[in-house]
Image (cartoon, rainbow, N blue to C red; front, side):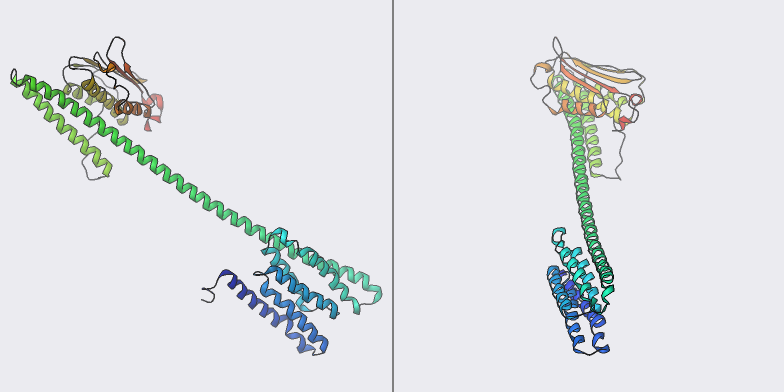
Length: 398
């Protein structure tokens, strides 16, 4: 395609040169055909110079104004009537006003005002003296009006193009900003999911290993005195290990997005008694037989709070400590409390690990309240209050 390898300025120069050539053929060439007198050839020369300014109207607008003005001065000095080429003046005024800035375009104003006055006055030689004032005034007003319209249309086109450019820039900026927001939201979502997976793995692994360690120590002590009790402890160890492996596989499968995996239900309130029983007989459970119907996310949160609290008890409370797990429900909330009489509250590790932080994050995600700290008189206390969906509407979906 012609002009495909040219720069924008060269393409403009080529297009405007073709337009100037077309104007030359239409406005100038017919002049000597009708009249071949010397005055006609003078008009042809100045008209050709004026038409040539069209080729420079966009690549060198001020130079085009200078060429057009020079041709106009020659016409005023040597011709007593207008030529068809004067319409080029309007095109040049429009093009320059459309191309240059507002301050630079002000150069056009005195030029076309002077041309609108000098040109018509030079055309009054063939008009009767009594009619020259009226004819001259009408011609001056007409030229001023046409030049002003060309200038204002050019400035309007310039401002419209500038507005469209600003709109494109704003659209691009909004697109980039939206893309950044989406990327940040994706990163935040990824970080949140990563934290949730890490929290789930921590709860599963820490609890299971704590139960395994406690049962292993107990079976070691009972191996010679009560072999049957040691065998039961080993069964608990094996069962706990299998369950923890199953939960870890479940979490990893979810993380991978394996749609073909056979996922079981997440642990909930009904799984708390079995989990506490496996942790040993030093933990007493107080829980109503009839459990409220709660969303899966709320049941999982309650289960993980009890699981993490039992894990901390097994790890930090001491070998002779005892704990009580209390689960209470009402139409408004679910209250969970795990209290022990061990030394965990004075071991210097409470509150600094990821277990308490994970529990607090879970409770906050369900719009609940969480407290954990040493008890007066010794021991450690964990309390979580989880509002039921009837109090949150659809808020628990978060």
